[in-house]
Length: 293
Image 1 (tube, rainbow, N blue to C red):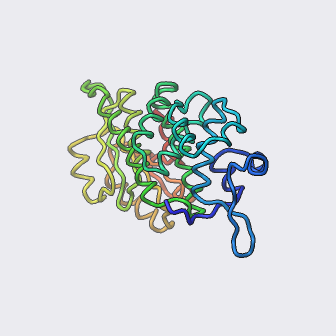
Image 2: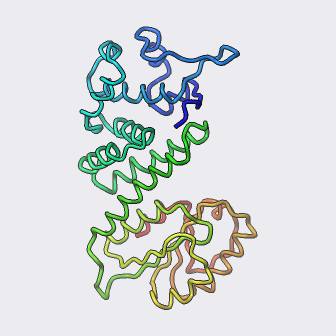
Image 3: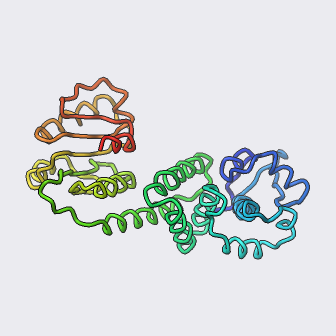
């Protein structure tokens, strides 16, 4: 990550969870960070400050006084951070551990934080209450141009690996009585973490799930559905769609899924007054869709 990213003290408050007033006190009394200044004398902070504060925050929440932390070198702080589990003081320690693993592309730290979160709260709760909110926090970093795209890809890939491994570890559903679900993402849809998590949830509940993956051409669906013969078809549209494009999508899906129930999540399509067949069910997001099962 480039050190050129510029944060205000309010940005640091959002990204670290440390109140701006506390940051100012730490800065003034203990000199734990020293802000930089623009050519017009406006104070700002960079990625080095962010990483230092994340490390300091982990130690402080785990009982080490800020006065003692201020006397430690950056190396000593980093080494001490590795001794903590990131789950002793609550979810914020987990967020800080994930943020640090993203900043340094540290796969070992990611595994440490993730598995200890899972051991404390379980797999589904970790994904729902830690991982997805963490990606929302990454969204804030995107808005202030604070992360390199490769860092987001790193985190997405780490989570993707965990979801696929969890799905693979579930028993294969072979009961003829199990309802069959086919899942897919349509053309131009590449963000699949939500669908992979839904795949896990549904398989864990005893549904026989076939997931076709990303960017599936709608023209290929009819033949696939003849093979899979699902009771339910599920999709997710995260990209924005015009009302005209949404109407075309619905029209094409009417032909494809005439025999199965079609559940799909799309915040943008929810805004339109679409003429949906009785076997079509639209939801604002995958979380509300999942609650139907």
